[in-house]
Image (cartoon, rainbow, N blue to C red):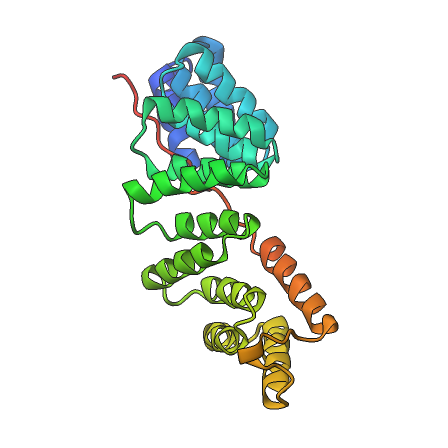
Length: 277
């Protein structure tokens, strides 16, 4: 700031000030510094990109996308910009545009597992489940420890009613992250659909051991325990639960899908663009 007193139009100083203010989470002031740079040098794509990141942190997603678009007009070969643009388009539920943005990122950087995962999420939202599975599988091929990709794939397979494959995905997810209740919950729901009620009960108990405050799954576990103890479920004969309980299972399935909002990887901070300097 002292340097700007003598050199108020020094682009490098203004850029450094904006970057510092951004790190200090003084986003409005950082934006002001970047805007001053753009008044002097409107074709610096890095500034448009950083400006978009700041607007994203302020949840001004549409304005952020506009800044990314300006950056891409100047430098369309930076995959980080396409990546972050896709993440914000997803946030605005503009899923088709998000897929297109991720496709551009993949052409530039095909070995980034995060972009394949995020593309799968957008395809899930578009109900293009087969394509989503393929995208998640590519993410897993690149990073076999990507828990989120296994869970995204499990969600797509669940919609496709490929239940045994869902169970396999959940098992892989558990092996990667054994302190998460989500794969146990999803596995329990699938086992109920397969009428494997005793196994479903075990899954709900494991989920509750991790997240004991989930009242819905406490209720679900208690219903299954009551049914099994009262011999209302004959496993060998595949006798179904009562219709009322089946309805509860369907509602629980929807609860799990809707309550656990999953965000694109690296959404909060965005990817750092590599400059040409």
